[in-house]
Amino acid sequence: MPYFDAASSAPLHPVARQALQASLDEGWADPARLYREGRRAALLLDAAREAAAEAVGCRPDELVFTPSGTHAVHAGVAGVLAGRRRVGRHVAVSAVEHSSVLHAAASGGDVTEVPVDRFGAVSPESYGEVLRTDTALACLQSANHEVGTEQPVAGVAEVCRGREVPLLVDAAQSLGWGPVEGGWSVLTASAHKWGGPAGVGLLAVRKGVRFAPQGPADERESGRAPGFQNIPAVVAAAASLRAVRAEAAAEGLRLRALVDLVRARVPELVPDVEVVGDPLRRLPHLVTFSCLYVDGEALVHALDLADFSVNSGSSCTSSTLTPSHVLRAMGVLSEGNVRVSLPPGTPRAEVERFLEVLPGAVAGVRERLGAPVTLTGPGATPPLVVDTLVVDALGRRCPIPVIELAKVIGDVPVGGTVTVLADDEAARLDIPAWCGMRGQEYVGEEPADHGAAYVVRRVS
Image (cartoon, rainbow, N blue to C red; front, top):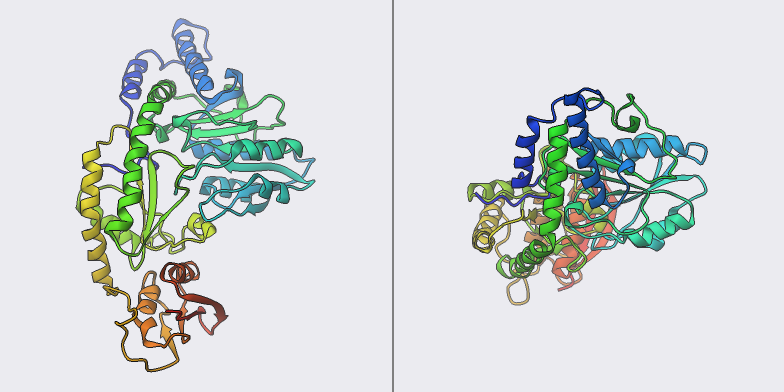
């Protein structure tokens, strides 16, 4: 069964499996002890730290291992805020950061979100506009976990350095593909993203950064990640990071060609699709697209039945019922969202079969939801009856409000309006996105007794 969700968790790399099995026999003792077994475990830990530090581009004594990438993020944010508490509590973050970064920043400081463009990228200048005299920390991912867009870390780091603000970089998605360039101050990552075992994170803090570890403390890992280290997992994480880096150049070129194939073919095979993220400055293995009139969760299930494992950043999830904050910040369509992230070694034949299966899966979901087969247009519109229509979609989840809008837009003349009443948060993003894709005018949002009223004017 093709697994296309490496951005969530990559399959365990063969080198990680070998290193894990070998170190289980050698790395079980306490590395803080002076007897033979302890010294042997300490040697394994030190070697893993040196290998990881080389891959990160820092000194070994600047890097510690944490129980997870999320733990590394929270420890990094909390440590810098505590160390720079005399400066202030203000934190600048991009609007598309991973939720762990957003939660960590919100729990410890006064947060300002830096906007992104339609590709999901920030500009260094935008960070300069939000940094203040009381800014204690800035955060920026190296590449977006949902759409793959790479961020201008070096440029933002230069802006932050000029304002004497440390920059924390979440490198979880990109570290397996190469080091993070630029003068970052703190870096975090997670081993299971590059094919290492779960339960191992990295936290690197440059010398000179004011940092005060928070939470439970002991003498291990410089007090930044207390508790007995899982040395076999740490060794496997470092070994697999070195291995994937050695393969990254060749494998990146191969996977980029496969992703280019998906980016080109999906809009040709499936009508009413928007491919999102930067087409050039992006991770080599990840592509995301959104389908009009499709429930993302239903599409994931349909593809699963066809033996493809993909993920969805769609607003249509049973757990949150809210739009993806990444897609919302980008101002792109959120409904029917599919993220394809290819693990190393993915054969071209699997990608080609995915492209064969996808159109039928999308069509099946649209049919079950009652979506229009084709949009009305010149020569195919029903008789014009009224100048304005009201569609009541209150209490209905996306993509139903947009589907109902598409069904009736041809019932008003050019210049007429359709008002959609909806209380699903996704409508605030998806209705303007639909207008942009279909060439109609989004007039705006108006207050309503329940939810909101979204007004669309027919242009063609």
